[in-house]
Image: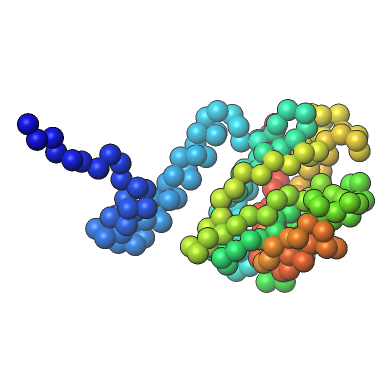
Length: 210
Ligand SMILES: [Cu+2]
């Protein structure tokens, strides 16, 4: 008896290309988008979305999402999915004000980094770090970056962790906060922003029900 040789699996990339060949290029993007929506739905059903926002680029176009999950001990897991970036590493930080209204003017309204300790900027700086500081994200040649980033010492609402400067800093003050993506890589040392350059995308995070 002859056993037919069948492929054991089809790589995702190949599936995507097949979709492109039969249904047009936009279908591939749709597939990726629906995967993202699926993850968000799963996180929501598990009660893991404690705050969220949408990224917009400097023209005001929607380019992705960010969701926050509180972790034990006054820490946050930050999940990012953003498109439209230049290929390469990008600095990403927590800024003080939930205002992304002035993208054409460099998102100055989002103010500076969250830094209640008045520390130097940079995860690798001996005099750091600001509570704003998180790991860089990397965008591939398709301009998309997806990441999970764990940030210690920050939480969402003031009442939930009994804030002290030695404890978790609550990001939801009266004016919320923003997540800013920069044009270039953060070297985690240079002042004031690690050489990360212009602000190219912004997500305003306003207080949500607990
Ligand atoms: Cu920044």
